[in-house]
Each structure stands twice: as structure tokens, then as C-alpha cells.
Length: 286
Image (cartoon, rainbow, N blue to C red; front, side):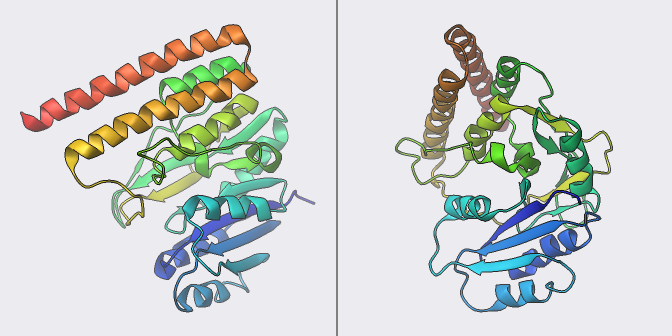
């Protein structure tokens, strides 16, 4: 028997997009799936009706509707807490995966007990028709320190929608940002995924047909200020906060001498980000 895999789909008030995600799950060529849809208190019955229309073609499909909106992060964590599978993945309600996604990534993880996660190739959809195969990071190094340094140098959350060992992803955490970013969810996955990187290798499927298809043009519910100068200040504060949280995690899981290297790479990464932002602003003003 193939190990049980849980696919968790958080959703709120986008039943027409949820259809796409469920259709992708229904096409998976993997036989042992548990599929959980967590509805964050969407008004009306449209979301429930969409899920019910897939009950026959998606074995193991379960629908939970919260009585009140618990926020996006808590909805993500609800799915992870409820998962029964040995392996777990999130799937955004506006995205999709190739039919061979789950089966290919299970094979990767089963062949490497030291791996935390296995990722497919990231396809970024610019609109309904136009997509681009994007560079997708993996962290196959044997050293936790080397993996952490590579991740911190150029933070990349593309493997958030990878397949994870449930026992590993449950050890990850994000305790929130300082003021003034307390209600912002942007970049939280960077902090969360560093735990995964520190605890094991992150592998990449060799076959480029194993794909996570990200429809990034759809509307998002992120909370950000409207004024440009304020937004820039909030972003700078958040990025410093992200790196501070990196240090906290590395202090717990790496040797004291390694922390000096982590902090040095972290500062260089922040300088690279700041210079890139400045160059971009100059180009826009030119």
C-alpha cells in the first residue's frame, strides 16, 4: 500500500477558482489521497456545492467550513493539524498541479529518508493562457548549515507547495512580525520554511513535467498600506524582521560558531535586497 498523502486546500469566497484546484487533484495518478478543504467562513453555499460536485471523483475528499473567519494563517495550520497522511502538501484554491505531481514526489521522499520535502517545477501563469517555467530552488546539501546559508542568501518560498514529511513540517513555526507588520502575512513562509531546510534536504523532481502551476494574477487578500513611502518603510521593517527570525531559528538548531556565519550572510543578503530595490527605483524614475 502506498503511504497516505494529505492535500490541504484553504479557501475563502472563490468557488469558481476552487473548481480548478479540485480538478487538478482529481487527475492525480496516485491512489492513496486524503483531500481536505478548509472554508474560512465563506458566505452562502457555493463553495460547499463545488466540493460536493467532486465527492465521487476525489476519494477521501472532506469539507470543513469554519463558523467564523479565523484568518489565512490559522486556516493553513488547521489543515496541517487535521492531516492524517505521512506526507502533506498545501494547494492554494487558485492553483493547480500536474497529474504526476504527488506520485513523483512521494517516490523522491521514499527514496531519501533524510529529505524533508520534495518539490516540482514552478510554472508562473501570467494570465489564464500564458505561463513561464521559473527557476525553482532546491536544497539537496547534506549540511544543515550550508542549506540554511543558501536559503538565507536568497530566500525562496517556491517549495512551500512542495510535498513535505508531515512529521517535519509540523515542527516548523512562525510567531508573527513586530509592529507595524503584525497583521501582514507577506513573506511569512520564508521564516516557516527555514525550519524545514534546517531539518532535512529539499529535493527537486528531475522531470520538468512535474509541475506546480501558480496563477499569480488572481486577487490576493494581503494587507498592505496604500501610500508608497509608508509601504516601503513597512517592507524594510518586515525584511529586517524576517532575518531576525532566521537568526532565532538558527541559534536553536545550529552550533554557536555557525551563527556568526549565518548573521554575516544575512546582512549581505539584506544589503543585496536594499541595493536591488534602490536600482529598481532609479530605473522607474529615469
